[in-house]
Image (cartoon, rainbow, N blue to C red):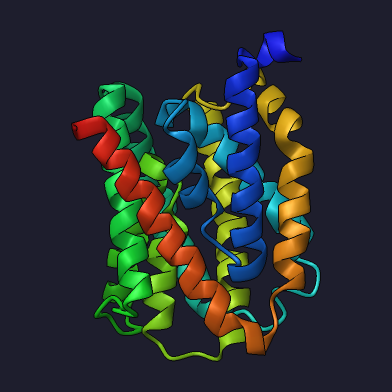
Length: 249
């Protein structure tokens, strides 16, 4: 399996640690698994190699969290957002596939740090529920999903601005990430990014990711939300900022 995955033991161990932390964050918040993996694992792997891994992990998370997790989702809000993201996603994938890996890392880490900082500061995207707003947010999320598989953070900023109940926000995010993952499979296979190698890598880190998911989901209670969410976002900012410093210093 290691031969197919083309990973050294050290890289595999670092990736396994990264996806475990990502599972914790995803299980609790309903999103941000990819952002966490990107913030951590770009130290040892290029973003273009992490994109299919993140995509498949998001689909695994959706399968675990979808049961009883989307009954309270706002479908009328989610479907237009992911529809516009589907149109823009291949442009983001093309940029990631063709640009210099170090530049790609900088962009990815900058996107993760910036979006997480906006989340932590509770600065929502200044849009309403109208068609134009959903188009702008959806297209932006599609581009960022192609660059960093972090379109969920864009959706989250937008959904938070609508002042929905916490469980509706979480359910809407789970639904959005699930549909976005299915769209991502289509485009990544079409563009030759999702390969057997990526499947092998995901199989190797499946167990730590699922353990993280279970622990994160167990921690999602109304009384704990005020603690876990800021901690998760602060962690993303610190990790992404540290990655940027390593690249530029």
